[in-house]
Length: 249
Length: 381
Ligand SMILES: Nc1ncnc2c1ncn2[C@@H]1O[C@H](COP(=O)(O)OP(=O)(O)OP(=O)(O)O)[C@@H](O)[C@H]1O
Ligand SMILES: [Mg+2]
Image (cartoon, rainbow over all chains, first blue to last red; front, side, top):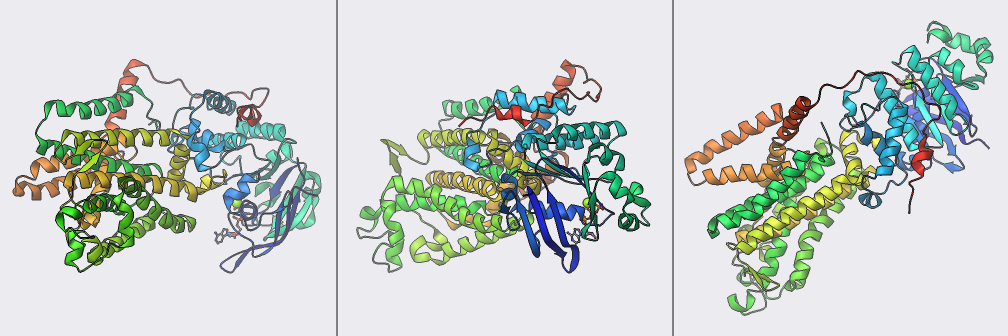
């Protein structure tokens, strides 16, 4: 049984059909890349998994739970983490505090009242910051970070959250080639320990990390297979027509 | 800018305020002045309460005066009941007998007990806040809409209190109270005892507030203020955190209201009118809404200056202008309030002490990812 299983999912935005009859399944431990032309519904697919939008038809099942009607925090507590297309960190909080918020094993109000700054947690968070190259910025506010650093902070936050399933929306957008490579390296290391779904446009990056690629087009799944299979796929080629082909999207 | 006030300057700031406040009666023995200072301190508590919900959790509560007023009425009811034997000799307070009420309404009964009244002075505002918060935060109402709803609530409660004249004293409020006596101490409005009660209450409120904002709950509150949506994806039930901040704030404001009855010697519907509610926002913003100490000082300074000018009515009109100008100036030039001057001075000082920071270099990927498995080791109980 797959860890994540979407069946016949349909999402509408006041009449506009963003997802229609989407089937999408991911096995535990897999690293799945999700690609497709602009407006294909990739972000919406992640939204429907993490509870941001709700499907009008179909089922979203995660580890045996029907999560289609759950709120965002309930989905998160089941072990699903999300990185957004637009980097979103807490700009007024320090890097350290951003990581602390993300480290959310016990999310209750009253539990956290007794949860004061502890040296051991601090050490762990500092290691994470060092890992993504933000050691110097540990006590600086996140609003002062550059775009690339913000991306890295968000990735570190995902690591702090330590979820079973990680949904990443264009993690390498705005990164230099070197940073993109570093991200690929990181994802390869997380492979197996976590189940990961990455939405990406960068084919070089995808080739570095992907086992299986899923291609979306007009709100549904168009094709699924290895990089070589997808590149040869005639329907994928025509879907990307006019957007400069799969490599130019 | 640090969000944690752990730096030295801040600690000194807290200590200095407490010391000055506690030492004041050594130099001031005039009861009238002490009463005035106690009033400013109570406004400080009220402003601090708003700081918790607005400054830390981003909930702009324009109905803060509801909590303040309800607390004030709870205390006044208890003090009024003790006057019955002297003032009327019957079973009801004087204003009720003027309104032809013969038996004491059921909700007045438990206020024969001081313990109940003090509990209710915090619990009633907190419960009301909880009920309102339950609907508002569940429905994910945010920003200016929260302000409008809380303001509407204020108007409604105010009208209800004025309307139920035979039970609440209507426009006149509840007057001619007895003096609170607890543990053998009489809290006369012009006594040092009452002043100290207010001062220690502010210190207690500061400590409780600090305990909250320094905990992880306080951190999550600040994250919610920053980006409410994002917080949800880390598994926090945002509505719970918002309602918690809202209720604690209401309870503290209720406590301030009880103290206010002691120093004013009456409770009145004017304690929960719109202008008090708006004043609280101004105190909080001027002092610094991102700092408990700042918010409290904002109230003390603004009302203090206002109070010293109020003796000449000519000045009072000018005062409204000065206050408006001050508010605009602070909001424009010091968005974190007057108290952010501490941060600014400290940063200047630090920069002089140490040189600039080194350039940023991307670090190489270490061999082993310190994934959260390392963090997980501290999972205890
Ligand atoms: N909140 C919304 N309201 C209305 N339409 C929306 C909303 N969100 C997405 N859409 C529409 O749904 C379609 C799918 O959007 P989505 O963001 O999922 O695409 P995407 O595959 O992530 O594209 P991109 O590669 O540009 O990020 C688009 O046509 C978009 O305009
Ligand atoms: Mg997208």
